[in-house]
Image (cartoon, rainbow, N blue to C red; front, top):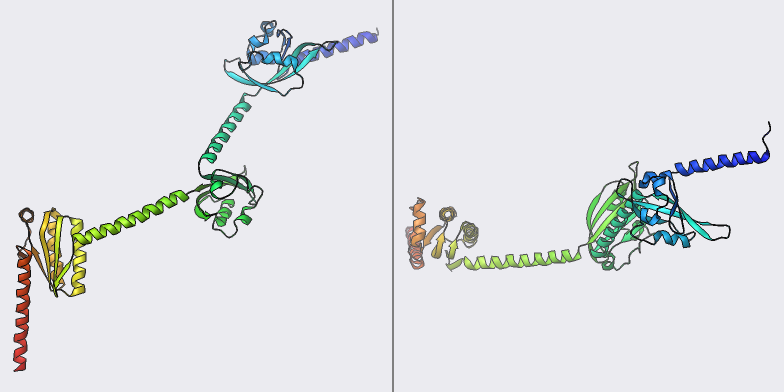
Length: 402
């Protein structure tokens, strides 16, 4: 039996319709068709899998009720009046109850008279892509905030040294503009500077940190190699921080510290003045609290003065000393011993009662130390001793003359 031509065409048309229906159901995109009253007329399997409602449940419902678009009640209706518009990305509640982002493309449906009868929309889940875009935008905002707030320059060069990125508020201090270096080679712009060697090492894979001075500005630099999936360096990202203000503050602080140190030295010199009463006799009047640190400084200064002047007597006058700590009493004895080793005599005068009690409580031996009541007594002692020395010297010379 021969099948007529019309019957064959009908068979082929039926097969095509079934293939289209199968494709409609199995398509990975959510396909929704709705009329001018926004009532859903078709709803494929992907829409069911993504949003939950079955086809029978979705048909006849309003699309803006079933799929509210990012809180915009007129979003679906506007598609009835638009053709060829860019894809829309709206958020919807997915089948699992979470918020998902979908990219929708649409095509208006027209009758034979060209009038709009509805809209067919095709939706793709772009939640992951949207989240990546959101994170990327967030990073961009953070980077922009940092570069536009701090005196910093963020830059990048490729393997040949060409600038591919150059932004940051720090360019103002250098008299430059953002992006001014783009397309220029760093090794040509900064030839002969110390930073060039750092950059070459960074391109060789060695991260570096350095300080430099260019454009009249002090910079702190970080050079960070960027590697591809094979581990080869294809770029260097750099962060350059303007530390001119910090350097200026550091220098001011250093200057102030040096001034304070000089002032403290003057105060120490004034508080422990070494006076040469006459040739061969030094006196050191001390005032205030005598602690271990001050005694150590006195020892160095006094011993140096004895050697320099050739003094025979050194008088330590403690009349103005209110207090000594336990270690200081021992240091005083050591000081007198050191004076003796230099061939001079150490004399301690003006010891107050509380100082004497401290020395006694420590059980220190003062038998070999000359102690007198006051400076006058010490000077008289020195005069007597020097007179005796002169008399002894004259006695030795007289027999020789006879």
